[in-house]
Length: 102
Image (cartoon, rainbow, N blue to C red; front, side, top):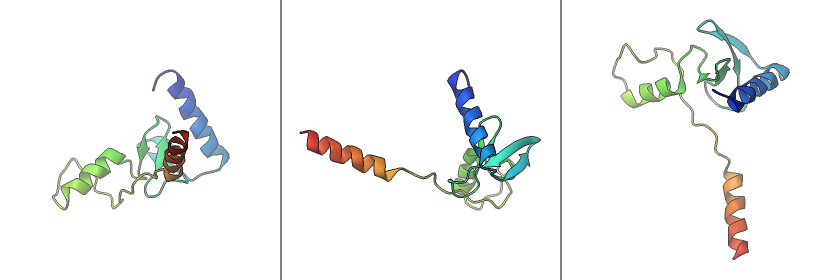
């Protein structure tokens, strides 16, 4: 991350520290659990979302797509990918607002 992204990451980690979220060590770095995300969601100090074993979301997506086919490059942990939450309320507010502007 560059510029403002580093400040946003630092702010996000500061909030997780303040909330005393769960801490694990992932590949030698401290990672904090993001409480509002379901499934394996830990934020590392480098800004990466991963499971508690260090597998990135992209790796878990690839593992899911591969089905049961074994691969040395895919994570072997039992973590299951869950979808990131979508803010449906924001979409409906914008749709209603646009409808009433006509």
